[in-house]
Structure formats: C-alpha cells, structure tokens
Image 1 (cartoon, helix red, strand yellow):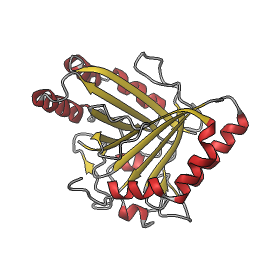
Image 2 (tube, rainbow over the protein chains, first blue to last red; image 1 turned 30 degrees about the vertical axis):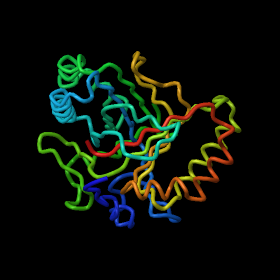
Image 3 (cartoon, rainbow over the protein chains, first blue to last red; image 1 turned 90 degrees about the vertical axis):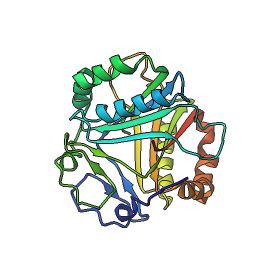
Image 4 (cartoon, rainbow over the protein chains, first blue to last red; image 1 turned 90 degrees about the horizontal axis):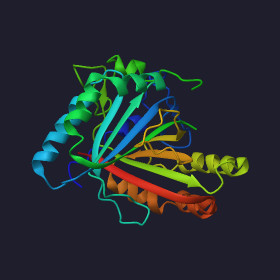
Length: 137
Length: 137
C-alpha cells in the first residue's frame, strides 16, 4: 500500500457545499451517501496480465475511454491488497468504474465512437469481462 | 427509470472546488477522475429476492452498516435496467459500494462491531456474495 492519500477527508468532515451534489450527509457519521447516479462497474481479466505492453496499451485505452462526455465520475483501478477471504474476487486485472446521470447517458456512451474504438482496438487483450450496472435501491 | 436526477451536473460543469477532493479534472471533457480511494464493491444475491420482508430487513441493515465511520462515500443499489448484453451481470439483488481512504480503514471496517452485527443478523438471507476491492491503477 503505497502513496495512499486521504482524499476523502474533507468530504467526510462535512465541508461539502450544500446542494453541490445530491449527497446525503449522515448526522451519525462522517459519511456521504451517493444518490441518483447510474454506477457502471466493469472488471477485465486480461489474457496476459503480466504482459507490460498489453497493460500499458490497456491503461492508455481506459484513459481515452473516460473522455466520453456523458461520464461524470470515473475510477481506473487494480485489485487492492486486502485480506484473502473466500468471498473476495481479486483475480481480475483492471477495474473500471464510471458514473452517469441517467440510463439515457449510459446508452449514449454505449454507442459513442470512443467506446466502439475502445472495444475494437482492445477486445483481443481480454479473456473475460463482467459488467455491473446499479441504480439507487 | 424513474425519479432519475442529474446529480452530477455541477460536478461535471467544472465547478468542483479546487483541492476539495483529489479529483483530476479532464480539460477535454466534463469528467472527474477519482484518485486515492479504496473502492469496496459488494454484490449480494438474496436467497429470496422477491421476499419483501427480507428486502426490507436487508435494506435497513445496509443503511445501518454505512454508519461505520471509516466509510467516506457509499451507495446502496439494485440492478439498473440497462440493455441485456452477454457481459452484463444483472442477476444480483443488491449492490453495496463504499469508499475508504486506505487499506487500514478498510481493515478497521472489517472488524467493526456494526460490520460483525450486519453479517451475523443477515447472512442467512443471502445465497451468494462477491466482493471487489480496487485501488488506483
């Protein structure tokens, strides 16, 4: 665990500008609850996760992909070094999480030239992909 | 798709207070890239997803769980009504996404009384659970 930053500290301290996001501030904890987003979380298993050229290409491709303008928040990740537990799936190579304002915006993204280009140029790199789309319960 | 709100509009418009979060604002798009969080995303498959009493109990239990004070951002979700595609996993019952500042904070969470209580009181409700932990690539 290196270069870990406490980037959410101010958010948690309750200094969120009211109305800036539709966050629900819990009085009982320094915690912010997201409301109203469509969360699109994709996990990729590269065919050759140890291949540095493949990783470099794929990371660059993800950085290009998040330029689609209906994406409002994004995170490009790798498995964390959390405790080994039976329920933890840490065999994937990349995590790609983006948030949209609506199903409509997600549909625009699916057909966007940058998204189609991403698939065309990179799908040979992965052996498996799993997508989870979630909205507020 | 009902009650959809465009909660991320202002964020995307570039009105993010500089330095407030370690967001990276892309000049090329109205997009904010998260950096520095540990994203803990859990998917639950309830044994009886159509059982209203079970759902009510479980949703209440998740609302209680996010009171753990090392959680900085949370989202409680259900599958979105996105397009049916082979790669989309939409058979789960609940999505539970939380963000921590660090691996240490996630470890505190794992042993927290509220987390242990959540498991003890609710594990009989789910038949399957999958956890993904991600940090910056």
